[in-house]
Image 1 (cartoon, rainbow, N blue to C red):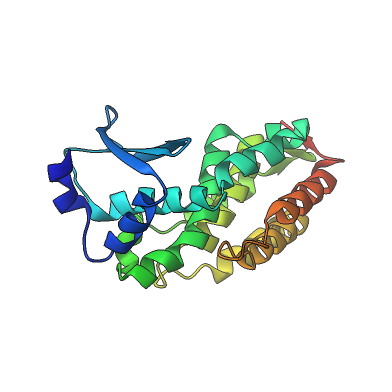
Image 2 (image 1 turned 90 degrees about the vertical axis):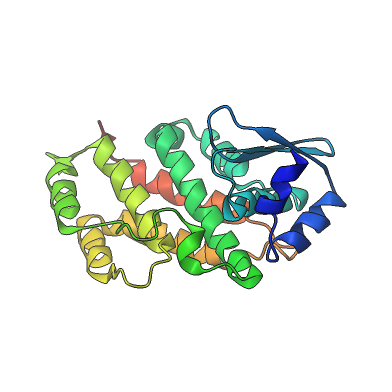
Length: 234
């Protein structure tokens, strides 16, 4: 697939490509699902590509994932592991929510890298022009969130997922201030602990080998444990 490299590598990602080739033996394969993905086994990295859509930006996403792994930054794996240490907290997060939250956490760390490489902000995510919250969605959330002190599991899932979606949204045209106020009115305790986690996450420096997000995840689970301790969720 060497002929594909002329379309996947551009003047913005070539330095990262060369850097990673000094760390891994990189193999490209066609993705049967038509999606870009990557994995590492020892010193061999495999990148699956969509041959019907050869995109330098999609390819760069995978290069950055490989770069994170080379620094032992495994956000999804470590987030899942942290949740699994507490059975009730783990059950609070649907599979879709786990995937979504880790995506938002990774995006917050990697977006500056894309911008530094010269990619335009609006091209970094596929949903740049899609608002992450609107009044109709908020009205439904308020109606479903609790009933006689019983919390609706799907509504809590939506609350958490939408909080992170709004926080990680990279389109400055969307203003979420009023929705954050509404979230705080709906569940101040949950909103506060999510906000504190997000602020802590923004302090993590993956370029600092002495920095770690282990404590950030630990405190997040502890805060969630206190929040859920006296609640019935169904």
